[in-house]
Length: 491
Image (cartoon, rainbow, N blue to C red; front, side, top):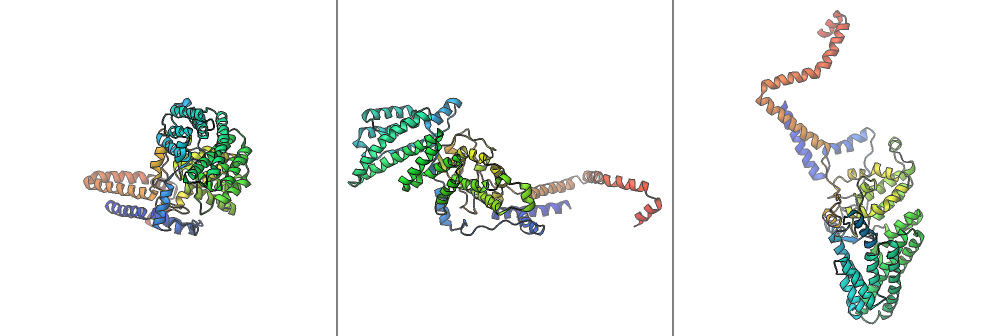
């Protein structure tokens, strides 16, 4: 018997393992969910939404995976001197990695330099400054550039980012940079049609002006002048509509949420949460937050299980599932199951770095809406049941890219425990059949090697197992007439 049970449980385990490796789910659980639960009044999972299927061709999947593994500039990155450096002074820890700062140096060289820098001595100095690794050397070079040209906008930008120790101090530098940048930008506009060099100079001066205006808006946001910040961001988006790749709308979304202007937030989402535009955690989770806001104050999991979900609740749950599928790392930070750190200067979309950057600024907005975090807590893990094998097959998005862990470990500091969701976990039935197979095989071996001892053990085990039944029978025999007991035993 033990040998036969060991063989059967071993075959079940092998089949379960093969089925799980091939289809990403347990066969026994799938049969239970698909066939048994509807018979007892359960509800089957909703089918995938047409038009959003991840199976659009292997080539498209590869291209999408490559784009998702690209590192992006964090739209809400902090100030080096006023925020990152202050954290280092207090804790002694470095919040930025060398890889992250090296990417920023490359960004500065791309945005703030051009081939015509040799025509202006101050720009030549700043071109070298952006390549310096030592912060003090960069600051010294910025002052040298200002000695050569008091209207060097990029020198003020560097001082605002790295020398200023407060946001107020940084804002003063950026205002000086804005004044100088606007003057140079107007000159470049008049020279634009002349040749390709002037075109490159105009592009550089445009980048400087946009960067300065954006950082000024962020300074206003940090100093509590929210409406002023919103106006500056809206004006910037109208003036330079082609620079949407800078994701200024994410700064606008965060500021509007702080104002609790949810109608304006919805209007921004209507424009940027489009199927043809790239997604981000800020887009997906803000959309989920607005849907959750409509039902979260009166949502109760017990009541929902009794009466079922309403249409608004279904929409909110689906929005949460969509957001979690895009970036599964965010909920643990929003639910404070994992500690936050300062966000990096660059993020990887759908990665842990993006989750840190989003939760760092948006946790307060989720807390402000009553019941929103409770709804998230009750529903976010259902995404993994809906997508049991997200590394190979998605639902609304392409499969989760496998390159995020490596890039996140380079972007995030060593003292941070990088999240590596989603991990493929073995179902309960595979563990159960493996344990049953091992236990029955062990009994078979022991019975073969020590038959007499196993007989004694089996008698003792079954005697102990049947002792409550024997006790009950003795009680019945004691209080039952002997003739009736004799008739029962005869039967």
